[in-house]
Image (cartoon, rainbow, N blue to C red; front, side, top):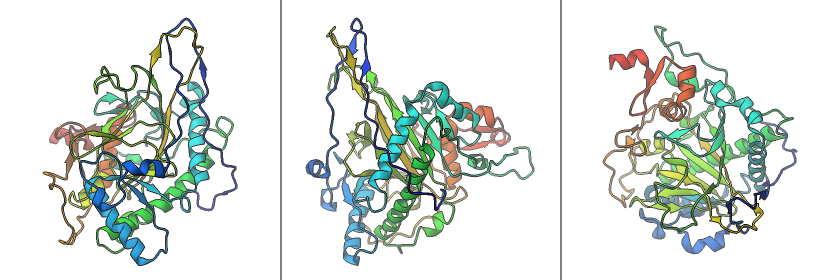
Length: 443
């Protein structure tokens, strides 16, 4: 991610939401008051931060404070024990005290860049539409992506490692693996269309990678492994990904109205688990993220000031034999309550902006089980299987040992038009595996 790039770019804060004019003759939405992002102290009463408070039937996400690099062994060990309990029981948590690694100005810059991009008109955004990218990079318009066959009510831009494209010749006697189609260049807006966008995003990527390496080191310690255990997993070519996403608010019932059901809610992205190792989520001040606990209940994960949300992916669930969890999560779009006040002339549309970052191994990485010490306690029932999740229905989401296959699974079925247009020789099976059509016939 362009190591050594200039850090002198002026940081831009989050763009404030602009009230939009609404006709006084039409049904319009109640303008909502500004909402401050909760602080750690305010949230702390609801957020467990030590192993004794953590349970698989959690009702809020734990909050962990990142120990600085070079801290004393006792502090690091205490954090590793807390991290173990959280990853074993929950698989999701807030991480705070990160400013020394991922700066506040960098986080604000990434959110600001995302807001500037999404404020552009559709024609400008579509100059870099994903439909033109064989590597699944670029802009995805509202509803063009799907989860488990249901459209996602969000727009986004997908980025990955800058590489040359690989042509997968399925007719070759020795074709490369299908997941090689994921190699390719990113699409970026021009500087004139969206000033400083690439600089802001690449700076975020650089610092997020440093934070991810530190968290992976602590995850190794939490499993009673050497701190460098995962170094060979990622090596010099981790397949990092990121995206910027906008979840538009929708006109609907008041929050808490009994008519709002799972069937009538609008999902920015449906229930799913992440395909890689480690995910970091930067949120603005708008709620929407929900995480499923061990009882199948959906728990809100509102933004907490100065934090990122961290969750574990399917590959970490595989290598730990289910000891650590890839937890299902989703995003529910905010609702604006319609009102009958004919004098209302302004409405504020509350859109949610987020920047997820995915720290993943190289595409050819094959998951190998970690020899966990017997001293690690199981505090919940062992899963029936660790090689599948039910995010796409029973048997609909297999977890593949080769990371590239697991990554292509997610992208190929979430973006079927890109798959059909650029990769007609590939087929997506019911369990998500992507194979050549010739191999599908043989099966």
